[in-house]
Length: 335
Image (tube, rainbow, N blue to C red; front, top):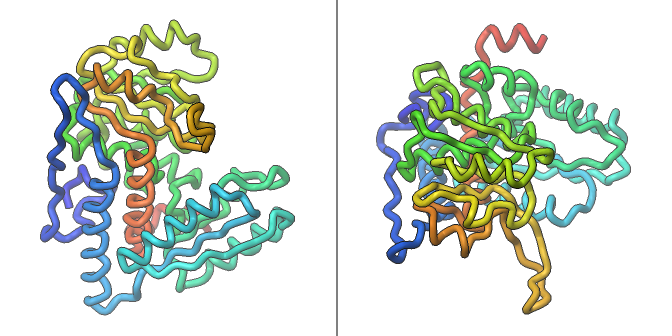
């Protein structure tokens, strides 16, 4: 597989090359990028890779998901992940624990899963109950099983443009941009949101050197956050070739903030009450109807970045199963 498709070169068979997705839109409207179509393509590639791996006599990849508490959104996300795993031929299990679990008990469970040779990929679904330190939990997962890409070693290697387990949502955004053919080299990009799991990694992937071990996008990236005044944010977005909205604020990005022909990737997802039907619905950070009249490309919510996140998680599980991220230097850091 080309380097543009995966954090490691040569992971997938050359039999399945990435295909540029052909998109259409009414004249003067942005092309609406279907994350679902792109995700199906990536899952097909993953399915083929798993089939080849198993046919060569290797153990089927296995993903273990730890789910704490009764958060409905978390249960829904985990169900989507295990369904996707089954679709591509990855075996999986969901380990349920009550919200009352102690941090020590959760760390003990993670330790057992780290030492279980049958477990290739391991993730602890976030968010966790307030009495549990999420950073401590993320760092407890073995870096070579860390399919979320949240361990400090994987984050550090990503920031140094080295091969690592990339966080699934930022990697999904990166794949949307590349597979759609949106140029990044020398372009101005605004990332609205600086979270350590989404905004920061997206900015890293887009601005880093395309010639390095883990190639980046060579863009000029501006990051905004909660203390960036709206008018100042507009001064940046109005000049941006690409705007990535990942702040979790509905309608943060409006049409007057976007220049003609910009590409807009909406990572935000918030459940709101529809003013007409009074039923709950999902919205992004972008005023979709307004912005699509000015942008060249735009992702919808739902159906944009979300499906890509799950697809990239499957790719990470395959990387973990193949033990492709366990060089001597990584082993030395984890003993």
